[in-house]
Length: 94
Image 1 (tube, rainbow, N blue to C red):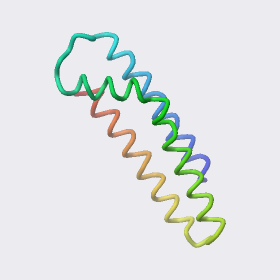
Image 2 (image 1 turned 90 degrees about the vertical axis):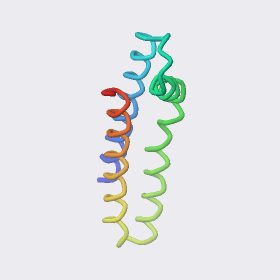
Image 3 (image 1 turned 90 degrees about the horizontal axis):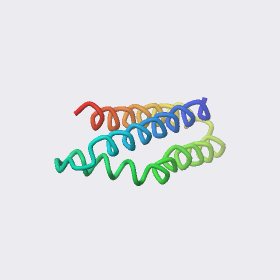
């Protein structure tokens, strides 16, 4: 289950980064505050892909040491995936 959540997070980050690159190239002269956020996500997209990797490695380590933490790891992973989706969605829509 942890790997599925991590893959979902990675897909959200990858698709969101691609959308940010397209939006940045479509309107490069925009000076509003969201343009700077879009530019940040477009430039730092590769580094943002480390978020799912770090979460997965941490969750795997915790679950192996203490199997009772699997439910908390799943919940935190799902919450992180929703946060990623909402963050990119907010920047794309507005």
